[in-house]
Amino acid sequence: MEVIKTAIEGLVIIEPRLFKDDRGYFFESFNQKEFEEKVCKTTFVQDNESKSTYGVIRGLHFQKPPYAQSKLVRVIKGAVLDVAVDIRKESPTFGQHVSVELTEENHRQFFIPKGFAHGFSVLSEEVVFQYKCDEFYHPECEGAIAWNDDDLKIDWQISLDKVLLSEKDSKHIQLKDIVSVFPFWEN
Image (cartoon, rainbow, N blue to C red; front, side, top):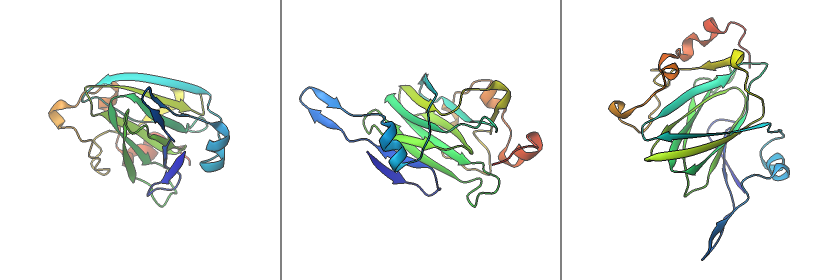
């Protein structure tokens, strides 16, 4: 696997080594030893999968400490624009984000460490999205930032009239309000 650094420390894109022939392809989607050597030491404890249609935006989600999560995300079918926002209060890149297109053709994965909010927009007719988490889901620690936060200026690559949101995702707070809502927020 090849690890591609991004503009924000800790966020990396992973490109697997593909073996193609006339039957199709094969690749190793995850190898704990190689991941720890090239990215970081972590133990994933939960795998999740979602299916969505064009225009869906999910996010920007995170879990608060002490149950913050790192995620390794990828697309099985279709295409998304995947986005990670640095919400580590003391980070020099606080409030900045990285976007990467993940598709069934490029087989890329995106590693999002603890301290980031995460979301994606569906660019294809349909998408099957998978992700590994290094912490179990704790509903009492869930948090989120508005997908359309004016300060973040994320281009989701979907026209506003096509955006589809859950009721919950339509009501998230702005990044600048995160400390007042979560006064115990730490890195």
